[in-house]
Length: 454
Image 1 (cartoon, rainbow, N blue to C red):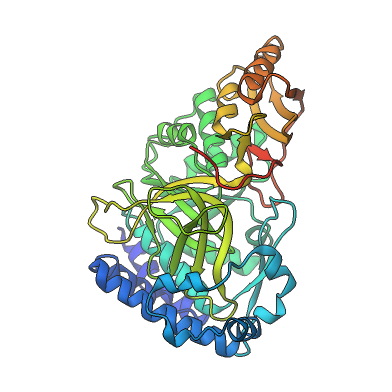
Image 2 (image 1 turned 60 degrees about the vertical axis):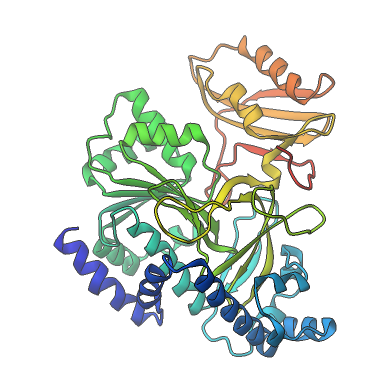
């Protein structure tokens, strides 16, 4: 760590956080101690926080005041995280119907946020300074696992309108001070990617941060054009906000000459988990209670696949209690070799709409169709849309190397997986745009599933 990074991490950034009313430097230091606590100590800590959190919600939040009264639920009786099962789930429809009632009477300075609406309808919710402080601290802790810190030069390849719309002069000065450069991920044309590569080579960042699809696209373009990026001294590429596919990890690591650190979370659910250098996907266990549930809402043990449900203990101003993420995952019951006692996510398998359902009802990973098209010559971009059990569309953006004769093979291979009677349409398009959030979705299924199978 050079002198300037120590100055930013130890003085400039903490001062900025204090001016904002955030406690993230103090919380990060606490988290760096608690990540090694014995499991019993950590669980006792979580039980106390949960009891206090639910008590606060029952006293200050109209929605939960009524809910607890209707259920005759007394937060003072909570002895552990298992007591959450006495409460119903919170889903996006409930938040939309009760947005004002979910605000604490004592909340001050709430910030309005929304999800990108990739499932069809954005979710509007509110975040207070307490939650921001904890989420920043959790991300900061995970960053330091990889030997980099706030103040190290970084390139951020991002597409969220929230970040991009905030690039006023004050934000530009702040980013310059922190040595952070933002590259907008909305447009990924060859000319734009050439410019991105030139800026990365000139900047020589210590770390990258971005969508897996965006960094993989840059990596693949660099490989195709013979532009070396593995000699720049990049230590780690942090990816988040989309499912990370194995071939993307391989492409990024090969092109940039650094490991990939996967992160899992969202604006709504918080910073849920992050990968350490030993490969463990550690939960932010101090702040977030993660449950895995089946299609009937039953909590499943580690090792079984189901929907990820979260309770964020730093959301007192706008509580997220048993919030259904629509994501699919598996908890692990084995410790990580890194020595941290934070439990692990064994697998994060994307959103429920990222799974494909065959005509006979078999549920498959989206990779079952992705593998059909991703390695074919001449395919620059693709997207698979399952409209119904009887109809699937495959969008392809191609270049001069693409052989139109491959269309018949793509169709046949897709029908072999989906069912002989399924109508598979391959459509050649000029480009495939990103979602409104800037994310890129390779697979979208409009066929409802409960819990995906193996």
